[in-house]
Image 1 (spheres, rainbow, N blue to C red):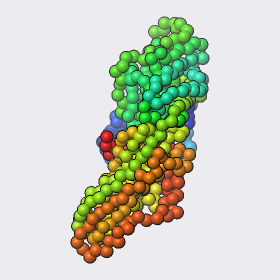
Image 2: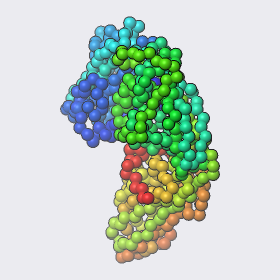
Image 3: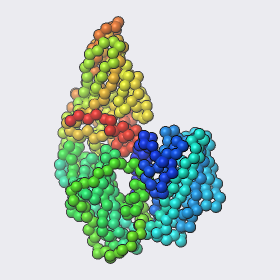
Image 4: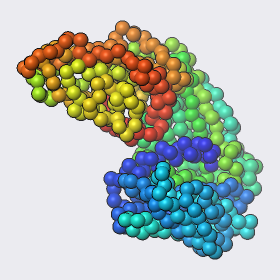
Amino acid sequence: MLKNSTRRWLAGLGVAGAFVAASATPASATGDAGATLTDAKAAEGFALYANPVIVAPGGPEKGISLYSLVDEPFTTYTVKVDRSAVDGFAEVQRPDGPGSCTETDAIITCTVKNDAEPDLDLLSLLVLPRATAKAGQEGELAFTVTAPDAGTASYRSTITVGEGVDLTSEPFLQLTGTPGSTVNSPLSVGNQGEAEARGAVLFFFGSYGLAPAKRYENCEYFDNFDTWSYACTLDGTVAAGGGARLDDSFGFAVPRDSWAPNNDYGFASWLTPADWAAFRAQVPDFGKSVKGDEGILKLEPSVAARSLTRSLPQSDVDPYNNETSIQLAVKGNQKADVAANGAAVDGAVGETVPVTVGFTNNGPAAVNAGGEHGIYTMALVTLPKGTTAVEAPENCADAEGEFGPDSGKPGAAAYACFVPEVVGSGKKVEFPFSLRIDQAGSLTGQVELFHGGPDETAVKDLNAANDTAKIVVNATGGNGGGDGDGGALPITGESTGLIAGIGALLLAAGVGGYLVAKRRRTRFVA
C-alpha cells in the first residue's frame, strides 16, 4: 500500500485531471457502487463520484472522498450519508470540515452554507473495520447530495472487508549507471503477515533517467506524466514469512541523453491486487495506459508457497513498510546547450500576424528531465513595443504575474513561457503568438532563456551566448513611431522574482497542476 503522503500526492494528480475530463464528458449522477468516474451519470445538471475502499481486520483506516463533478463548486449544499448497509462490519466516522454534521442512527447529514472557499471535494470520510469484521463482507455506502438550483444527485460506493496480508520491501536501493547503459534492479517483496499473499502489483514512479529496460505484457504504462509511471500485475504467491523477487530481466535503461553527473530518483511500491484496484478508483483519471509487448515479468518466490484456492480479496495491514526509494547515480560528463529562437515577420499596421518563438535543445543532454543536477529552461518573451498579443500560448503567463488559470491570456507586454515535458537532444519547443501591429517601423522584442535547478538556483547551460534572440516585426503603414528598440524591457524586481521562483514551479512541473493539464498542446519539432 502506498504511504499516506505518496497517496495524497498522486491523488492530487489524477483527481484534478478527472474534473477536466468530466467537465467535457457528460456522465450519470447515480453511479453504481465502485464504478469509475466515467461511470458517474449526470442528472439535473451535476454528477457525483466517490471511491470504493477495501479494509482488513487489523489494518489501517481508509478514506472515501465524495466529489461533485461540476464546473463551479457548490457554496451551499447538503450531503446525506446512509451507512446502514455497512454498519455491521465497518465504522464510518462522522467527517470533520466545513459546515455542520449530525448523526441519526446510521444516517449522517452534513450541511454547508455559504462556503467562502468552495471545493469540488464535498465530503471526506474515514472507514475502519470493526473488531468483528470478517473477510468477504461487503456493502454499499449511499450518498445523496442536494444543492440549491442544481437539484439532487446520488451515488453509491462499495466498502469491502479483505483478508489481511503484510507486504514489505527494502526501504532504499542505490544503483549506478551511465547514459545509454542498462542497470539491473533486484527489486523484491516480502510478506510478514500470517496469510499467503496471492499475487502482487508493483507500482513504479520515477524520473527520466529511470526508463524501463523492457515493456512487459503484464504491465500498464501511463502517459499522463512527464516521468516514468507504470504498474505490473504479477501472478504467483508470496508465502507468509517468505519473499519473492522480480526475474532477472527487470531493470532500467538510462537514456542516452541523460544529464550527467546526476542523481535520478524514483520509488517502487508493492500492493495487493485489490488495494491497487481501490487506488485506481480513488484516482479515477490516473492516466491512459498501454500494455507492453516484450514478454511477461515474473515474480519468483524465494520460499515455496502453498497452493491455495481461496479467492477472497486481500488488503495490506501496514501501509508504511512496502515502498522502496530508488536512487540512480548517473556517472559521466554530459550537459546541454539550449538556444533561443526568435522570429522575423512582415505586416501592415492593423494586421494580426503569427509570431512563433521558442528554443532548441542542441544537446547532448536532455533538459527539463529532473534529477538532482539537471536544468529546466524558461523563456522570457518580451514582445515588440507597438504590437499587442491577441493570442498567447497556454504555456505562457504574464511575466509580471504567475502561472495558473490566467496563463495564455492576451495583452501582456512580456510572457514567461515554460513546458513541463522533457526536451530531448535535438528537440525544438515552439510558443505561437498572434500579434496585432499597432504602429509602423522596425519593431523589436526579445526571447531570453533562463535556466534553473530544482533548488531554485540559476544555472548556466553550455553556451550562454545563444540564450537570447530577437523578435522583429517589420511594420508598414500608419503614422510610424517605431523606435527600433522594441519592447525589450528591463527585468523588473517582480519579473526577477518570478524567474527566481521558477525553480519551485520547475520542481513541480510534470507532476500536477495547470501546466500538466496543458501538456498535450505544447508544440515539439524534431
